[in-house]
Image (cartoon, rainbow, N blue to C red):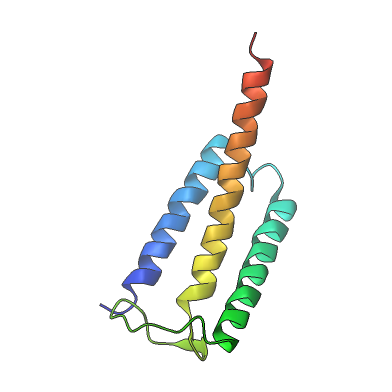
Length: 108
């Protein structure tokens, strides 16, 4: 089913966003800084992908779950969405870990 991977990425991102908002971890606390971090991570990983594609290390696999739209050779449209999700997930996990360490340090 084409687009299923993109749908699951969107559902997963919505779940992480719900946790982020519920526990006030990243975006609700510092939206501009969080957005810059996610965009910077996404751009970094897209550059990494570009190098991998140019050197022949990364190739686009065939999957019926992809939409079939390429932004560039061997770069499906789902890739930047996945990289943004990965960056956002890392930011939320990092924020939760920092909060946990602060709480542990404050405990008597």
